Length: 347
Image (cartoon, rainbow, N blue to C red; front, side, top):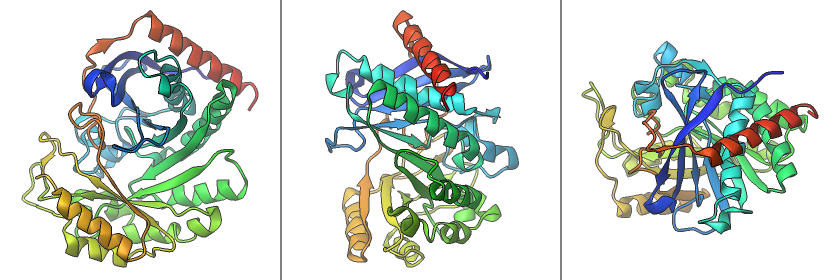
């Protein structure tokens, strides 16, 4: 039976005294770089939904880097070497350890029995890890049932790998998943997309949208299109500057059918060591949001947790953890390992 290759070594509190969440640092197979995952006390800022959000990594570093297609704004792809894909066990272990930590949190008791949302948006491109992620979801759901925890949903994210979409649709048709699983396509831009997201040269965004065209009809839920709100974003070592102004947003929406897709606009977190950007004004962001809704789209505007702690979207770069794990954490990790081992015997 396979065993885990990741070991929890440290963590950081996100926000004041951890009121926004915790970033976890793991060592993979004895390597010197840190794998990261994060638990957030709330899924969205300013909204109390009794849903806790988790960000889970699927690889040590990002495989897109291995063929020069890493996103220019992502610290994982630009600052960490790609080392290996994670097994289903190691992906599920992150989920389970984070939930166990919340269930045993004495400071924030509301975390004990909140619904759980797992987003595969940490280090790595889930489109190339789908066979492992799908099994990790299976393991996670089984363990959550044993723990008496409610899964709100799993979010499968991709920067644009259509094969993952087709595989997901096949799994949905065969009733592989027991809990809700949704798709998130990190589109972000259309004009000059290949300059910021080089994966577009291999898989044009149109091929991904085509693969997702019938997902809403098949699953009963519209897949989400992610759009980062860039304001004069300039990748490192580049003279290219991009802004997602209203004109650019209008061009993006023309490619989408509001009956088939929903939208998630999110503030962009720049990291000066990979690229710089100005702050996108709240007024302009709300104008874009209202325009999208006026075009018939279900749309939300997200403000990222963990920006100051370098644990927000695109900012996981293997930072040294501030806190070392104690005996309490060793016990939780051991319990996670045992829960997974017991579950594998029944799947």
